[in-house]
Length: 556
Image (cartoon, rainbow, N blue to C red; front, side):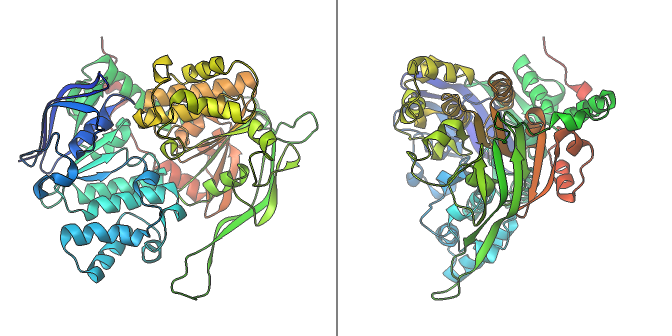
């Protein structure tokens, strides 16, 4: 029996047909991935399956879930056998920040499985443990804002598993996860899907390597049209179109092997001492580095286990010292919860330090009103991990890029600056009048980058800046960031779990674990000879593309 059957599906919004008559199916006990670049129609197709399309969407065709026609039927009005569980791309938006995770997990268990409250609580803790959340008995008592991005995404997967449906849709569920956690989550999805008593899976991704770890079949989309579909191994070996072949080439470039081979060749040819010189900290005219982060630490109060109980604290960042020079490109990597984002928040002046200080060109940086920090905001801009949670959904793209130019008092032709910033991230003039809510996840991420570079800052602090982008666009954005750094002298600090992206952009890499820096070395040295076991674990967990290089040839 087919868990999902999509026939000649067309979706039109504001007179523009985005999905153009696609047909595919997911059989019971099968894992199928929808592959394609940002804007290809993947997420819109998933929302049609969920019954979560915008009100102004016009649909044609058919969607049948377990034999029940659901196209045009909102999710709350669907029959029980046509229910679908969903793992959203943006975990910060999917979870209720005002309700403890315990209550959010208990609700679907009681509603769909008819558990008692005590049984539902025990099952919630078991689900939290199964998706790799640390200390599950205590973490379910916390709020989503107290978790890292990777931990929130694992909660979303646990919520989907709690719904007890015969079909699960996962929209880019691993983009916010470090590679170690990603591997664990993919193993969990394998365990809980595509079995006789578990749901079939429709997995939406732009990453062939991740798809090859999990799925047996694929549907490749481009501009709302199916370019190729069938067994994933066949698509690897004989891509039907140049577009599919390009996606596979980009997926191979996103693995770590090409960079290890490149650095090995460069190290063999480089004169002695050249590698050390490449990461020399560059001081400004006054002899001071751009960032001088000295002995900073941060701990947070934990929720009380019961009323009037003693308050406990968790150390998010041990005493840490990092010096970054003007124009330097530095990667900060580590597993989820290692302290990367806490360090970034201190550098952004969004939080206070318990010890130590953050200096920018010798001046102390403190949290405070934007008017007092205008000098700092002009110098340092931020690219967020979750653009959907930082962009006003009702504002147009043009207004969103104009806002920092106006608030920071940037002089010049703002319209020209807006167009330049958008074109540099491959968003043309037709996007100017679109609202943020009308953008795909990848388009929203590109808008966030355009908004940051529009003010021409001296330094960019980026939190997973390409995690929501398809692989070809990721290459383009990394090339853009490198070009900005080299031509304008803009420094970049990138927080990421993606060592291949860091290898392509950064000259130096800082590895963090449990709130402490465990390695701080030139990127090529780090990849060729990792000194710490946590660095080796990150390298070992990067997904491999399960196809030999000679098997994939350009088409045409």
